[in-house]
Length: 68
Image (cartoon, rainbow, N blue to C red):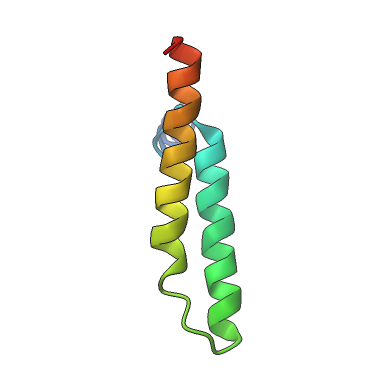
């Protein structure tokens, strides 16, 4: 396997990991933060809120899958 393929697989696994919905959620939150900032609004608070919400959703799904 080429070095490039392994490099890309590493980054995919590192960024996406076990839950692709968290990765998409972070990208959406980053985009929304950028849009709000371009409009002149203080959007520093959006990323921490998004991370907490995404973590709670991810943990909730993991607990349901584990049968608990």
